[in-house]
Image (cartoon, rainbow, N blue to C red; front, side, top):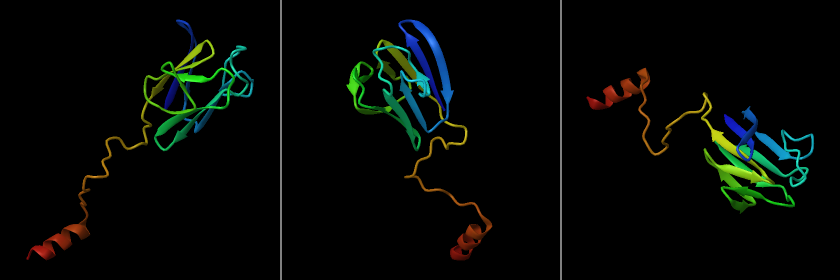
Length: 126
């Protein structure tokens, strides 16, 4: 789950909570997050969910997209990143989805606990 807080200076303008795969940001009315400011391009940036990561990409905007004050073309967002578009900032809070396995380590061996597995182990012990 993604929470995006839109700010102008210290003033919070809106908060968006979404599980959408794609989120568009820009001045045009068709964007998921509309920023009505002439410094913002019509289709300025896009956030795309890929697996359990969120990538933000500048869509060729006139004034650029900045993450933590660094200009980016594409960037993998982490919890707490601040994106600046024009004079506005967007704070990204990333929360794991309830259906997402947490602390999965593909390098650890998974222990099977099935009747068939126990039978095979017992058979091979004797």
